[in-house]
Image (cartoon, rainbow, N blue to C red; front, top):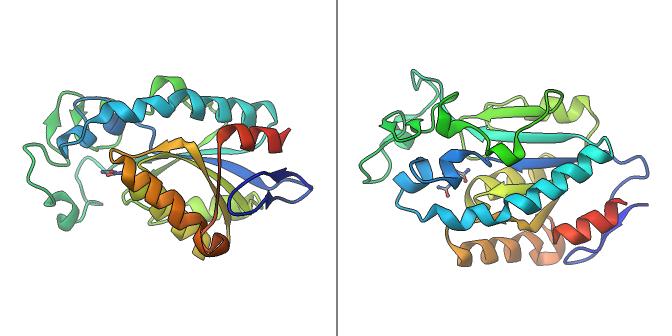
Length: 221
Ligand code: TIU
């Protein structure tokens, strides 16, 4: 049985691997200046560092013909799927739907809403567009996972304590076994990333497992 040397104990998946790579919101809005992340007052530069690591995992899954699902956080141009409570939040100059340096902030199809060039999906790969932080909320993700008999999720992306953790918790409640890749996720706040990793694997993997990308790659091959 394939096994990844994870914390708090080894992560095993079935002999016929029903494992998918989930890449959360690696979009320009969060990784580049001028997007939603910066509009919220964050220094976005630290998120760039994980791109090569996510890319290595993406290539490994492609090489093995294993499923890869990416998500993008964004709203319809008329903002009909953006609750007032989300749009109103914060005290910055730019809000969701406003025109910024990369087009309208957090609106689907705008330049800032594109996945970073290094991680662009192939035509055959799934991209889930989501209006919330969790990737299961008002999306087709669960139907796609069920249709492909996927039971195990290797989770990467940004930001660790917001969309990544929301998605991991949603997935765990739905019965998926989640492993969060330590060096393929990042936060604007290093301490929040560390806290998330600790809480995911606490209580003997109550929410999930964590491992490095190298450990995941060693377990896959
Ligand atoms: N602000 C922040 O840290 N994150 C988000 O708003 N969305 C995601 O995490 N993708």
